[in-house]
Each structure stands twice: as C-alpha cells, then as structure tokens.
Length: 380
Ligand SMILES: Cc1cc2nc3c(=O)[nH]c(=O)nc-3n(C[C@H](O)[C@H](O)[C@H](O)COP(=O)(O)OP(=O)(O)OC[C@H]3O[C@@H](n4cnc5c(N)ncnc54)[C@H](O)[C@@H]3O)c2cc1C
Image (cartoon, rainbow, N blue to C red; front, side, top):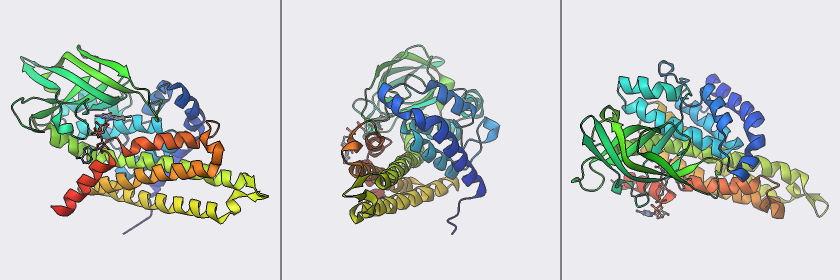
C-alpha cells in the first residue's frame, strides 16, 4: 500500500496545473458566456500530447499511466470543465476504444492521428430514445458490398461539430433482442451522409459543443468495424468503465476550484467586523468540503490504479463517479453559499462551477445508473 504519487505523476500534475492556470483558466468565464469552442487551445493541447495521454508512444501517445491521466484531467477541469470534457472524450472514449479493440491497420490509420493530437475524437452511443437504456438504440448499420450503410440519429454528442473521428454504435442484427446485435464502428466525420444537425444550448460546460448527429445513408467502409461484430454493447460498457474515472477527475477538479475560491473569499469578505472565515459556521463548511473532496479523490485514484494494472474497474469506477460527482454538486453549492449573494453573480466564478458540476451526475451514466452497477455487483 502506497499513498504517494510517483515523481512522474507529480511532474505531470504540476505541469498541467501550471499551463492550465496560465493559459486556460483566465479565459474560461468568457468562453462560458459566448459558448465558443476553444479551437486554438484544443489544437495546442493536442500538439502537447494531451489527446492520447495513456496511449503508448509507438501509437503517437504520451505513454502516461492512467493515474497521471486522471490527475491531468482534474487539473484541466479545475481551470475549465469544458476543456476537460473535450479531452476526456477524445482520450478515454475515442482513443482508448481503438487502442483496446482495434486491429493494427485501424491503429495506424485512426489511433496515431488521434493520439498524436492531429485529430479530435468523439463517441456516439446515446440516441433520443436510448439514454440510460443505451442497449435499445435504433441506429442501423447494414452491410452493402464493401461498406456498411448507417441510418439513425444520435444525440447529446460531445464535440459533435469539431471531432474528426467518432466511435459509433449501431444495430447490425435487426433480429437480435435488446442490447444484442449491436456493433461498433470507427466513423470519419467527413463521411458522406453524416451531419451535425443541432447544437445544444446548455446549463454548464458551455464551451464544449454538444450536438445531435444524423446518419442518412452514411457510408462506412467495412474495415472500420471495430472489434467483434454484434458485440458492441459489451464494448460500450467496457469503454465507459474507464471513461467514468475521467468524469470523476472532471468533478474533482471543479470541486477543487470551488474550494480554493471559497477559502480565498472567506478570508477577504468582512461582515460583523471580521472576516467570514472567522465564523465557525464557515470554517465547518470549508472543512466538510475538503473531507468530501479528499475521500472522492482517493476513490478516483483507486479506480485509476486498478485500471492501469489491468484489473476490473467496473464497480470501482462507478463508486468513484458517484462520490466525485455528488461531492462536486454539494461542494459547488456550498461555495455559492459562502459567497452569499455575490456567489449568484457572474462576476465571480462559483456560479459557473455549480452549473458545470451538474453534468458530472448525468453523463457516462447517471448517478442512478452507477448505483445499478454497484448494487448489481453486490447482489450477484
Ligand atoms: C452535455 C452532455 C454531453 C453528452 N455527451 C455524450 C457523448 O459524447 N456521447 C454519448 O453517447 N452520450 C453523451 N451524452 C448522453 C448522456 O450519457 C445521457 O444523457 C445519459 O446517459 C442519460 O440519458 P438520458 O439523458 O436519455 O436520460 P434518461 O435515460 O431518460 O434518464 C432520465 C432519468 O431517469 C433515470 N433512470 C433511467 N433509467 C433508470 C433505471 N433503470 N433506474 C433508475 N433510474 C433510471 C435516470 O437516472 C435519469 O434520472 C451527453 C449528455 C449531455 C447532457
């Protein structure tokens, strides 16, 4: 048992922190207001190796371990949660899928450009009528000669307008019941018949784009089938096991940002002739915030450690996501409370943290879905 980060892990965390504080955090509020996608910033982060953080160097990645990856995502999220989700999707959903399930040709053609930061990734599982029940998806993929023809609609797709390479789930066996008969495809954003049709106007993570994506006789070469045909739903669940650890990191980063802001403000704001930090009610709120954040971080690190050591992280990833996201919602709400009325205003960052927090309880499986995963493990 060792609770110390390695020198490499500390180095990566500190490097990202330094860069994110200087180059990302100062403009986060403006992007939140304008909903502008951080194109130039994301390009720079790709060039610096943050699209393929845990992908081996031979495939263009940075070759970090999974713990370093979550520490990096946490630091990005502390500066701007929108940036962190763009990176988290491209790393743990898109690049990971091809790394884990792809053949060598697919890795050379699609993983190397992703991991080396030349292309951005996206992940298309959700549909208008298939959210938590993703296995009921209706997008179809029909083999026609050398190509699959995809038809259907995906919604709430992160980076839908900006990603170059998508991992897409579609039904290949129409006769198969429930979540059976689904396959996974690597789809180029420029494929004929694929379009981003509607950009969502969101509560939080507003500078990441979230889109509806439409497949109308979209042509996908049959060699872009990823992994085993008709095994896509199991693959989706496996991929999300890792993705959820990334979302935990996002949540913990937002929590840390809210805590830091609350500590600073409580020392500056004076009422009744003293700093509000002198009131025990405020001190206890701050103490409770740090208690919950540190517990969430430890559970996140346990899940990341299991993932990097090749162990199952299904239950541990779900526990990590529940505690991290629910802590994040609670901590950011407390931060607004500590700021009083000023916390409700856009002049201060805590209202943004509170808005950004909410999504971590929703995507890559809601808190209810995580509890299904955890209780299933307990009861089986
Ligand atoms: C900003 C954003 C970005 C996203 N990015 C992506 C992306 O890049 N790719 C992608 O594929 N998807 C993405 N999603 C989709 C996301 O994963 C889904 O929204 C999420 O899984 C929930 O599905 P739903 O919204 O359809 O809610 P529903 O499934 O309709 O759930 C509604 C409510 O019912 C509850 N519920 C449902 N089933 C059960 C049950 N069996 N037991 C108890 N409670 C239940 C849910 O927990 C929730 O509270 C994104 C969503 C958002 C909002």
